[in-house]
Structure formats: structure tokens, C-alpha cells
Image 1 (cartoon, rainbow, N blue to C red):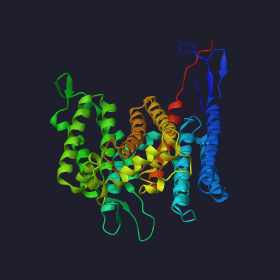
Image 2: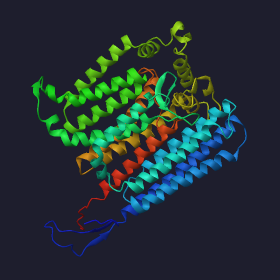
Image 3: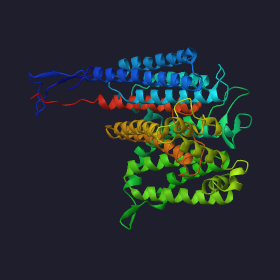
Image 4: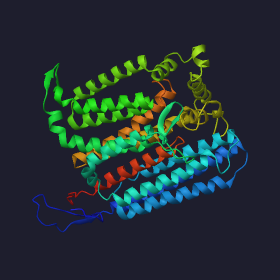
Length: 469
């Protein structure tokens, strides 16, 4: 049986004592060595991106920001070292992927700062580096404190309460902040604002996983069969209706369509994984689309989003305050990038409003082109695929649901952002994970990576039987 050090003894099929043929497999050490090699490549890519931005936009190299990036690299290596002691079996690809996405985002934000003439110590890029450091430290803390993901199962309902409180914080007078029409931020005086909903999505994933494990039988086995599918009883619709009402409340009171879609989509996917019943998905989609249609007809904010989406190139919509100017400029930027882009530091992403946050994808698409965006999307796809693999390989139902939920929330957020920027769906204002400027998003997504690393370590650490031929 394999032990923590990765030693595997040949065990007879009868379950008797180990035979004389014994193989020693240093799998944990190998995994961490692969991770270290990939981390060094990721740090090199990040440093190269900053240098290319400086050469393209300034024609010279400034070492100050590069030194700050080196500091981030040291923190990432510190997380790697911590995993060598407390998570030796963790997935070797998650940390390098998150590192390179974070670094590419910093490089593009720095490029936009240069375009705005604001590349000093109070620039958005320096703030992003500071938030990245905080986020990586938070990930290290999660790895060190949460030694087994199953301990989170004990705090199922506490996690749900924490999520609700976090969602209510922006509505507290004097604490909440309204930015660009959405009331999803909190702040005290001149202190930097924070979006508690980003942390709430992690608490909701823990709550949904724990709740569905406890109530899976009643949600999956009982119901009425119709058109070849088993639909739940009316009295079992309570959880779906509660989450739907919560999502609609986010639209009404916080004016945030993207966050509402993110929370409801997360619950639907975890509910489907827990029950394997497609009827839940159909009911959930029906509820959400019905709510969205009603909201678009009754709420001016939602109606304007749909109008900007459907009639983006209408001159009246384009010129209106809060109209489709941002959406159209982003599309023009993507078109200007073409297949291979203008090159880092040589585009005009600053023409699009808020290019460093909401429209970081359009900014990168202009300078890296379609090929560069595909490379970024493949990194996201690999990150999500590894998360799904970790979840489905788990030996316990809670870990399975938590892994799938955490991976899916990243996938859905990327889809919502990219879909809005490319006019596939209405623009929502969510941040692109790891890339976009925003401290709360960085902290939340690095915590997600840390939890997936912990899950993967637990999954890989199960005893295995290897017969030595």
C-alpha cells in the first residue's frame, strides 16, 4: 500500500502481506519537481511580457516593475515550498497556470497605465501586484490551515450564513459603494473598496456541496416521471426557489446581472452533479430565463443591458450615456488585433472605457491577437479540466461536489465575461479571473486554486495497489 512518502509495495490479490518484489515510486517528489519547472517557465513568461510591454510602449526597459514581479515570484515559490511539506501529492499544473494568468494580467494593466500616462507607484499595475501578493499569501494560509477538505463539511450551514452576510454587506448604509451603477462594493472612508460577493461564491460552493450531500436522496430519487424524465415533487423545489430568489434579489437590489447568473449557474451544475437529473437543469433554466425576461421589462438597468446588446450599432444607442460605446469599441479593438495582434505595448486598448478591468480581454485580444487569446483560453480550459478531474476522482461525495463547483465557477465566470465582450450575451461587468484589475477577485480565485490543490492532494494520497510483475 502507498504511504505518504510515495512508497508502493506489491500486494497480493488475496490481501496478504507484501511480496518480495517492491517498487519505490517517488511520485510526490516528481510532481513537485514538475511544478517547480513549470513555475520557472511561468515566471519567465511574466517577466518577458513586462519587458515586451516596456519595449513596445516606451522603447526602453525599466527594472522597477520587474523587481516587483520578482517579489511576486518569490511568494509563488514560497507557496510551492509550503506544498512540498503539507501537500506533496497536489496537482502540479494548477499553480503554474494561475501564476502565468496573473502575470499576463499585470503586464497588460501596466501597458494600459503607460497609455494613460500613469505608470508610477500609485498606478493600477502596482496595486495589482500588491493585491496579488495578498492573494498568494491567502492561498498559502489556506494550504497550511486546511489540511483536509472534509473539515469544511462540518461548516456547511455556517458557510451559507457567511455567504448571505457577505452579499448583504454592500446594502449597509455607509459601508456599501455604488460603482458604475452596481452596488456590490464595500469601503470605509478612502480605504480601497472590496467586493465581498467574490468571497461569497466560495462560501456558497462549500454550502451547496454540504447541503446537497445531506439531502441528495430526497432530491434525486423521489418525483413524478414525465416525458421520460423524473421531475421533483413540489415540496422538493424549495432549495431551487430559494437560490433563484437570492439571484433575483442580487439583480434587483445590487443591479448585478452577472453575479446573479454566476450564483444560480453554480447551484444548478452542483445540483445536477449531485442528482444526475436533467429535470433540475430544465426547471432552473426556465426559472432564470423567466426572471430575466421579467427583469428586462420592469427594471431599467436590465432593459438597458439588453438594448445595448441587441442594438449595439444603432447610432442612438451608441451615443447615449451608458450606451453601447464601450461594447463597440471593444469589438473594434478585437478586430484591430487580427490573428497575431499588434504586439504588446503597440495597440490602443486605452480607447475602450475601463480596459484594465471589464475589458481586459479586449485589450489582450488587440495586442496578442486571436492566437494569443486562444492560448489564454486554453490555459483556462486546462485549469478547469484539472479541477473537474480532481472533483470526479474524489472518494467522497462532498469533495466531488466541491471540486466540480469550484472549477465550474471559474469556467462560468470566464464564459460570462468573454461572452459579454464578444457580444454573445449581454455585458454584465464581472471580472476575468486572474487577469482583470481587482483585488477581491484575485484573492477569491487564488483561494479557489488553494482549495483545489488541497483536494487534489487528498485524492492522490489514497492508498493504491500496484502488482509488481
